[in-house]
Image (cartoon, rainbow, N blue to C red):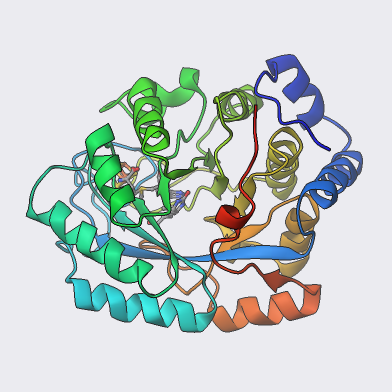
Length: 328
Ligand code: SAM
Ligand code: DTB
Ligand code: SF4
């Protein structure tokens, strides 16, 4: 039986991250096989329920009001529109809907009441519901949990040291506090980061240390590859070499053996063979549907063909609840 550890040191993680690539993938595949259904992939869809106009300055984000991007700003969607999209996502094969809002934080107002209604109604469709709404108090997390929210996404994005180079309008600690609030309200936690922001390997390793040293590992860990968007400060960042992505996924898999590791933004730039190597290295979730929040993503039909080719199966909804991660 695997014991889950939350005391990984930088040196240990570094050693894993820098192994010869195929050795690393082989080890990660073994850990994955010992802890999870090897060919099973959890499929989520994203929906931007409130788009653009965000007061934060995250340098990667097309939705920050201060950057001049092509994003169509849109106020909070109506509940029935969301349900329509949720049904479409379910028909496409997604077991989870993740609703994203370009907010700095949740405010206790009518918009939040509407989000609560959305959570209730999507939950009633027998889909896992996830929200990513920015910072959250414990009381707000509790309200979402009471409405049937399954997961809360709040990424730490990078290492604590590099964070202020990317975002200046909030601190690393603010992020950790929200994750703690979600945990306390018994929501499952989805937290990961982005590679390709100009960070060093040390920052990636530092980020993985923070995630794996949380009292309980996040149930899901999204690894995003930067989607460079014109108008944002990171628009001209060079593309992340594919082996860096594989290293990141494999290392996350080895140190957080039972978490769902999500191959997130950036898939449109990856071949099926490259994605296959990510799945071998332990990735076991994707975002499906032809849009992420504001940028393109492979279509349901392309992904269906890929699943067929690789012999992957979609994971049923609520499997976590049936087999919770046991830790400590
Ligand atoms: N406003 C909320 C927040 O920041 O937590 C929720 C939405 S925000 C868009 C969710 C996550 O998307 C960010 O934490 C970041 O990791 C990811 N993201 C945003 N823009 C991205 C980009 N251009 N490429 C890759 N990931 C991106
Ligand atoms: C996550 O880690 N990645 C998703 C989801 N969680 C919210 C968002 C990716 C956004 C990519 C840029 C865009 O489409 O706006
Ligand atoms: Fe706003 Fe979230 Fe984008 Fe940052 S990542 S600018 S908080 S929407």
